[in-house]
Each structure stands twice: as structure tokens, then as C-alpha cells.
Length: 196
Length: 134
Image (cartoon, rainbow over all chains, first blue to last red; front, side):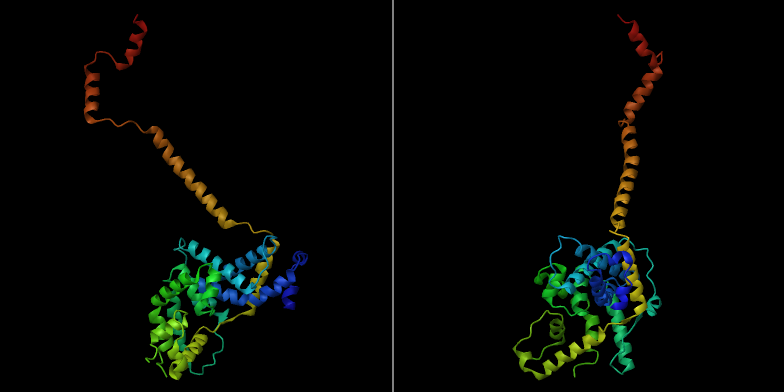
């Protein structure tokens, strides 16, 4: 945190609470970046969306109209999800864009050391994860957001409803449709080894 | 009581099915629920992100913060695109509207042509005749 705070430019130090903001950003940055990457399925877009998210947060925090935040983590998650949804909506027009290859990300993202010693299992899980990511692209934007928040971030339905500004019943309907569309991939993910 | 099916477990995992009396009492089903939770945590384990990349991203954010309130390029792009489309639309459509002549039937055209042919003097003379009429 100290090193991060030292990086603050001279102009920024003059701004109230900048150091607090910097420390908070550093603590949330990785989670928000991964959330954006899972939502957008594109490394460069996720990088830009993460930057946009924290810029919006900063602008909002400096707006006197902003109310006190009960849960900053949930608040920044909501900003990130909305930023990603905006990008996905505008991306529909960018069909000519070339997607960067997986090797472009290899130097930046590495799988965490798994506790599972079985290499074959890891390989299988990686393959299912790849299939799941492909299948997620078939989901509608709201289904994708609800599924990402549940599957990767383990949010409750009530939390997802709050983040997406929907009622719990609607979130449930989105999740139901999402899991129906991903049924084959999810089945292989969870039941490939059969019940013990 | 019947054990939960794979479908039931999957729905429960995604918050679509509540725990019931059966799973509260069935050791097998509870064990399966625990296995599935462990499995999901394992497959959704966060990848490592290079600290250099995160540091560069923070520098980019600070850089943009220093630049002041963000210029909303995306919004401006839409405004400019819309203005250009409108300009193109009016540029093409308005001259056509002005130039559009009333439709004339083939019969009318032949009548006009034969009238011109049978007339001894050109049509343009008619206004001059009007000048001398008392």
C-alpha cells in the first residue's frame, strides 16, 4: 500500500482522501479486473473497463451529491458490472474486431497453484472452463452478469439483485435461463467424476 | 425419501433451489453438496495477475485522474456520427425533393408532343400574343 501511495502524482496529493482512495483501489483492483475479464472475455477491454470503473468511482466520490456508502465493495462491483454491460452493448457493433489470442495474456495471467495434485484433473477442469467461457457468450447481457456474479464471485441472489438493480425474482429467472443454456457444460464441470 | 438429482444439486448451487427436509437429514446428499462447493471453488480459483500489470494499470488510472474530468469521447463520437449521418441524409434527400417533377402519364406525354407538332408556332410565343391582346 505504501509503495502504491508513493506513486501518487504531486497534483493528486492535493486532493482530499486520495491516499485512502489509492489504498482502497489497490485492494479491489485485482478482483475488479478479473470480474471485468470474465464479463467481457477480452483482456484489453477488461483493462480499459477496470480503469473506467475506478475513474467513475473517483468522480462519484468527489461529487457532493454522493450519499455515504454502506458497502464500498458492492458499490464498486455495481459500477464495474454497468461499465462492462455498456461495453458489451457497444461491442455488438464491433464485429470486425480481432480478438487477441490467449498467448497475449499468458505473461500477465497465470493460473493459481492448484491444491489438486492430479495434472489430468487440472487439464480437464481447464478444458471445461474454456467451454464454459465460450458458452457464456451465448447468454444475454443480464444473464451473463447474473451468472458471473453467482458462479465466480459466489454472491447471493439478494446481493446480485442489489448490484444489478433488479428484484430477486428477475435475478432468479435470469440465472435459471443461464444455467439451462449452460446445462451441458455445468454438468461436465461438476459431475464428470460421478457421485462419490 | 428420494435423493436429490444432479439437476437439484445444480439448481441449489446457483440459488434456484432451497434446501429441504431430505438434505437436512441425508448424509449422502450433504456430502455431495459439500463436494460441489469445493469443486466450484476449485474451478473458479482466481488466476494470478502479474503485479507489474496491476502497477501499470494503476499508473494509467492516475494519469487519467490527473487529466481532470474525463472527456466523454464515447458520447462525443455518437454525437459526431449522428451529425454526419443527418448531414448526409439531408444532403441527399433534400435536393431530390426539390427536383422531383410531378409524374406524367404516357398518354399525356404523347398528347403534348402531338399538340406541339401540329402547332404552327412555338409554344414560347404564347406569352407574347398576350401582350397585344386588348
